[in-house]
Length: 75
Image 1: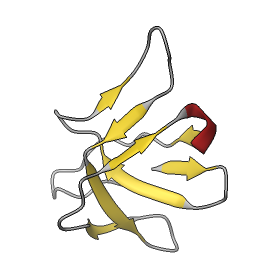
Image 2 (image 1 turned 90 degrees about the horizontal axis):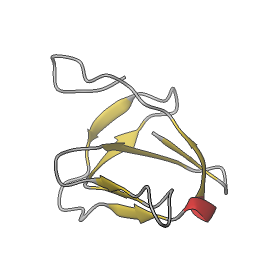
Image 3 (image 1 turned 90 degrees about the vertical axis):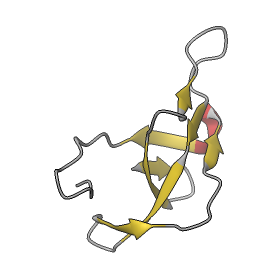
Image 4 (image 1 turned 180 degrees about the vertical axis):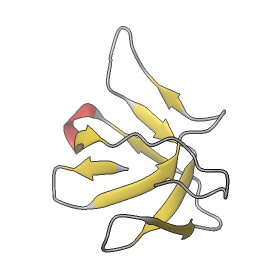
């Protein structure tokens, strides 16, 4: 999950086609698979047809990283 600077929360899976930059411009992130996030901050379902999201360092405060559970959903 990504905690955006405007207070929104974005859910997603960082998969094989996702990307995070390190050098020379760190902090740029492409998340390939977006998910709906419930009010209790759990992943509900993938957003079908979404091309993903590109985030710049100025867009977000921090990332929440979770290990994927065997059911295919992440928490």
